[in-house]
Image (cartoon, rainbow, N blue to C red; front, side, top):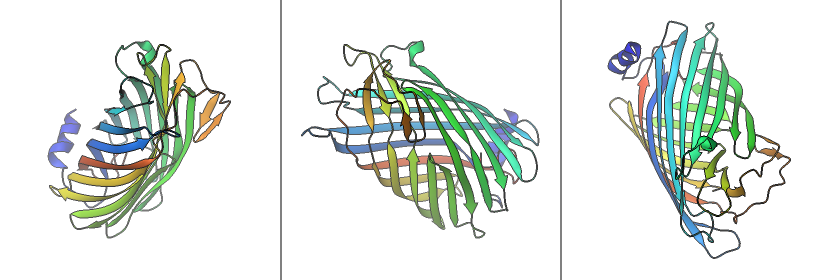
Length: 305
């Protein structure tokens, strides 16, 4: 913990290399009038999220990683239900970042999580994920990464390979950070301001306890793409973003126990489930984010985790 406090006190400003960790990220988004397919009904979708990531340096080769992701999303799952539903997700992060050589490093994180409407909390609300990434440093400005994300979900087992890269131009204006097919972010800086585009697609599922007489769960698979403008404060340690984007709004309701065989990335196998709600169609959204970022020493085990 002393190492982490030392980072916060002595490394809040940009160093020569653009190596950083986003310690805190909070956001709010609103999607208005997302329509239900083949009906005249629609729903608004209001989302809040907070992400905390804490790296603690153990030695020159290893850093312990911990943190928590919190999110909530309020929407109507079906025009037939009596009220809107709030979906909550709490995810803990426990892992290790390791540097092996000048070129090779890795990150391994365990991800226990609880996802439901939180009306009655029980062991049925828990799932477990794991994230493993290997990184190859090709040059001072370019890193290649590959790995795997896997998780138990209420619909079955979800896995996806991850292939991505991080690039920062020599003048430190252009940045690309991609871990496909889950996330991607490309931006260009103009002094304290920046413009960018990003992409996010990760599946989640939520246990619902009291919405209907039949126990159900939500299979959530939104694909979001947005463009944003960003302003930096305190030497870019505090970043403020305003986004406009489009989301597929995929929130499908199924009876608990109605599962598929497995899902790999966007491909489902053995999916004979019966969907209980109409599809929610895609729509535009507004999102506002605030980020607290610390910049670390080059070649540190925690660099660009």
